[in-house]
Structure formats: structure tokens, C-alpha cells
Image 1 (cartoon, one colour):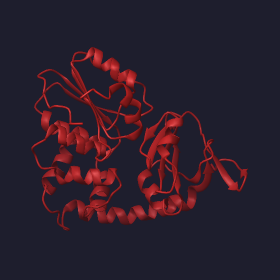
Image 2 (cartoon, rainbow, N blue to C red; image 1 turned 60 degrees about the vertical axis):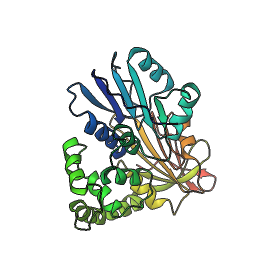
Image 3 (cartoon, helix red, strand yellow; image 1 turned 90 degrees about the vertical axis):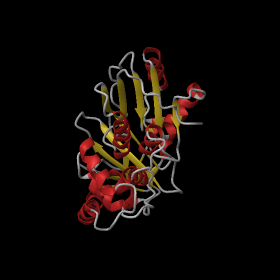
Length: 303
């Protein structure tokens, strides 16, 4: 299926993107690079589990690296000039495909990240910058590009700011990245400290656990470094779950699995979340797992 056509309307544009995610922000940055001259461009971060925002009317609306449910997308389409979905998440595709399979503005490509899809859409004739290529390399957990871990780690230490990302884009361009690139040097130091944090998180808070469906794995209580903890522990367990209490009282679950592990998107769907087969997440109103202290026995959640 081809990408939705790029037809920039002179009117207002609202761009929803996945919050607290470099791939989501990369999607917004790619759009902003094209639409920065528009005074009526709104970039709005959203996350699964949030209440539905007050939707605009009579605008061009983008939803990138994220998808509202089919009912919400239908509502948006009824009240706006055009609604374009640019996503790559398996569970969102499955929710949307039956009702929007022939809609040219609802686009899914599981081979690329949200930021890369947005770049292809907004900049079809321009080379892909290293910034976007590196964001995709991390988001798809490939780690194939030179200095990808160092640069992505350094990038995560900065706020999601359009001007900051533009500065890094200028530093890296689209050619070969050198080892003396400032982000590479910063990332090396941060990775050294991060390794200590990962060891501490695993040592102090990891415990065997089980979901109500019977899936067992290693559970780690941590509000940070979810992907890094998951990647660190996947060789030890086919299922890794990073969970934490949120400020609003709900519980955040981030799931990772190895190739021989369960489809974590299916687990997340049971609790209203979603994602990919090997990386997914959901928000629950209460703790939904129980620790496993020995075969067939359970205990209390550690404080």
C-alpha cells in the first residue's frame, strides 16, 4: 500500500504523536521540518491509557507512531478535512485493518519505525538523516548502525525539543558518523553509568512473576530504562516485565520477550494495551501479576 499523498492544506494542522518516546518525537520532528512555517501547527503528545483529548474540527489531523481506536478515528474523520494515520504497531494494525483496509490515509508499515514512516511521507525526495535512521535502529531494537547505542543513549539524556534535535541533525547529517561526534563521546560515558544502574535494578528488584493467563517471567520494578532492562534480561528469561507505580495511582507494565518467548502484544491486549510481538505495554488500575516464590506457590509483592 502506498504512503498517503502529501497534500499540505493551508489550514490548521494537528499532529498527535506517541509521548515520551524517541520514535514518536522523531515523527513529530519530521513533520515539523516540513511544516515549521505554519503558524497553526500543533504538535500534541499522547499515550495509551490517556483520556481521549478534545479533538479539533475542520483541520488536517495526523496520528503518528500511535493510533486512537477505530471509533475515535471515525469521529475524527467525520469532523475534519483529512485524517492521516502513520503507524507501525501490530496491535493497532489489527484493530484498524478490518474497518480501514481500503482507506489510503490509514497507513501501517511494520518494517519501519514511526519516525521513518513520517520522514518518508513528509520528505519523499530527501535523503534520510542519520538522526531518523538511528531512532529507527533503536525502536526496532536492531542496533545495526555504527555508534547507535552511544548516540541513542546520549539523545535520551536531552529533552524532547525540536531545536535541540535540529542541532543534533546538523551535527550528524546523512553521511558517515565519526567516533569523535559529540553524541558518541557523551553516550560512551552515559552507557558506563547506565550499566551500573541496570545491574542494581536487576539485583535489587527482579523477581519471578506470573500473569493471570499463566505466562511466567522475570519482573523488575523500575520506572526507568524499560527497554534497556528488557534487553539486558532477555538472554536470561523468555519474558521480561518492567513495572512501576505511576503518579496517578495506576500501574505501568512494559513487556519484552525473546524469539522463543510469548507474543507480548497478546498479553498487553488483554489489559487494554498493545505493541509488537517482542515489545509491548499497558497501563492497569491495579497490580495484575503475582510473584512466584517457588513452583506452584506465590507470595506477596515486594515493597
